[in-house]
Amino acid sequence: MAENDTHNIEGRRRFLKAAAGSVAAATVLGTLPRRAQAQDLPHLSPSDPTASALKYVEDGSKAQGKKTASDACFNCNFYQGKAGAAWGPCQLFPGKAVAAKGWCVSHAVMI
Image 1 (cartoon, one colour):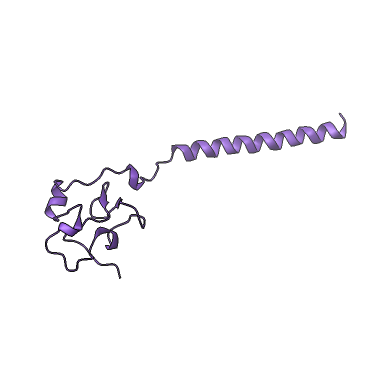
Image 2 (cartoon, rainbow, N blue to C red):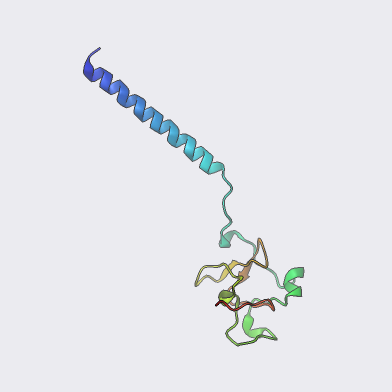
């Protein structure tokens, strides 16, 4: 066997090992649970029992009992949505998205 043939065989082996490793990694990563994105979450309904108990409203401008007019979900410590998003996750309502302009009695101002 010529030296060039041996070099080609080794190159193929390295390529096949790398390809097999990549396929295995892609398979494992593809089976991991995907973190829910805000757009995947169902919107919280004001009639939800927890939302109702916390007096959640989708439009904070219509809320009764706010400390300041600027209080809204988007500036609350519990809100986890991205800046500028219309809806986002909230720690108080797991698995649901709240309106960024919404409000509830548990509003906690970000410090």
